[in-house]
Length: 250
Image 1 (cartoon, rainbow, N blue to C red):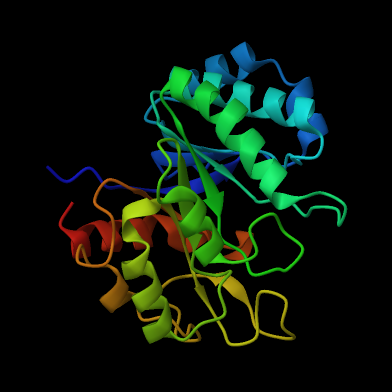
Image 2 (tube, one colour; image 1 turned 60 degrees about the vertical axis):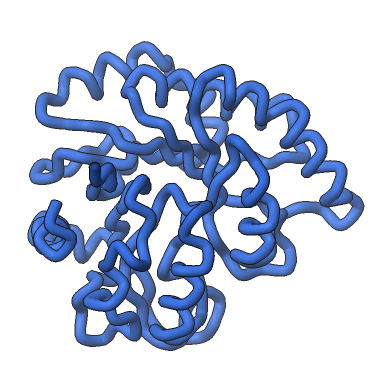
């Protein structure tokens, strides 16, 4: 049975009127920790015809470990309330004095048991940066491949590869990818000068060929596919979601 679900990102407390399945996103840790979790659950539940298919955690920093644990626990509660199984998190920028192997030990010995208790997965979003906890998709893959509760969120706008290289990478990492952040991009993005990212997937300016990518020989059938567009392109979301579903025969 095909389990893949297609939706779009909503930045709480904003909601997209025409999109039913959403990624519920939070970004500032301080603001998130002030929110009443029960109020969020009530508010989203009152939005009829809305299904939360993944949670995007705010940008918690692992070197503030107590705060990090608080953020992840609250996201686990939200995921359980909305009956979704994935939480997306940006790998934070880390200070030079912090040892990655020590952080990885804490993640597997302390964080993973909590994820297992709640029955959810923490999906590390892909970036290219030597200063982040995970510096590239391959490091996420290596961390997640033997893990029970850590997975990858592959963001197509964050990786500066050609369409064919992207296709090969997504296929290689398919088994650990549980969330796709889907958008197209121009050349010159993700830290390079010029070029837009997070543009509509069928935009003529885009370098990625989604007619090839939107294929179950490439994608993980058990994942969530989240369209993430710049705000000026939100008007294309509903149409593009319908097209994606048609291509994938969902």
